[in-house]
Image (tube, rainbow, N blue to C red; front, side, top):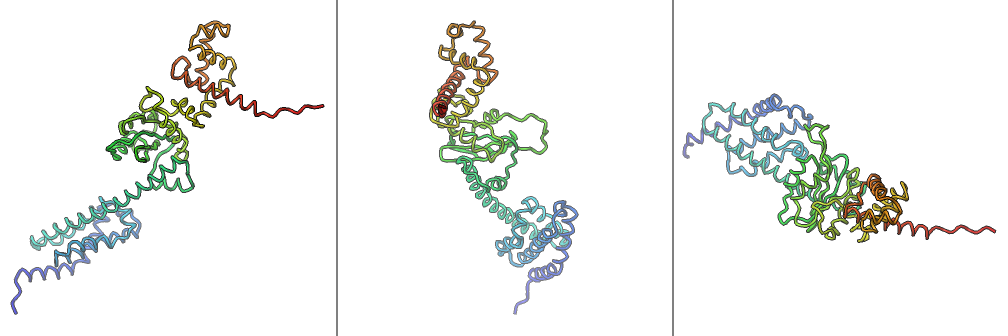
Length: 405
């Protein structure tokens, strides 16, 4: 029987010593965590106990690794297997690395003077554990990212189809939506190389929340204002038109259409329907800007049979004018029929051209559209036609009064 070498004897003695002090190391580590890491002290007792188990598992695993370094893969994984799933969700990677650092510091302090071999072993093992922690959190983040992407796609699809149900608010909350107030939907084409992270970074800089839906060649962004920590609440918020202009470079070639604002995310289907209808007919306006508002495409949408556009034109233009003054409706009809000529309109109505000019100004004040511009003249003329058709149909459908003998 051969005598044991001095190196093996030293290692055996060191292992025996480490096993004796492992409990003291765990206790000292927990005490140092309470003194140096505020997040640990603020934890509920059950989670603090779980963190203590992880620290104890790390010390025990180091002793096993020091005995057999080839056991690194399964020992490192075994450390985090001791942690309940709730702990992985509540403790960040940064906090986990802080935990590893404190444990290593305590161990280094206790082994000071025990030789370079043990100190190097601590450094090598802590490196392996840090990589193992990063791997655990990376896998969790990847799984969470895939789940979030599927959930986000489901929410955006529900908004586009208008099939919102009672589960939609909870799904939105699960995605971390912090939007408040009005919401708009922006529709365009998907670029060949779409950078989702760039869109989210841009949205954060603009103080908006965003849900992203990629449906083949179509890209849909649901935009809502978000409260940003540290931002002055009295600071003026950007208009959705400005937000859309900043996000426009993220879309592919073609038209980008912004739906009208709605009061809340659960009502975003109304904005989505308008944006999709506008996107379908945007090519009919040769000089359409990019982005273009869906309400600027009301004539094209109405001609394509969009009932929402028809009703919007009647409600926003024809009925307010009719309720305000029939003279405004008559003057607007005549002005548009006469090629937007003040003189021809004045002759037809037997009034002075200044009277026509005044009435057109009143039209603009009542409904917000200016009949003297070619594009807005098209919008107004479409509204008058639709309003007249609707009025004629309501008259035809009105039941005739019975004759009394």
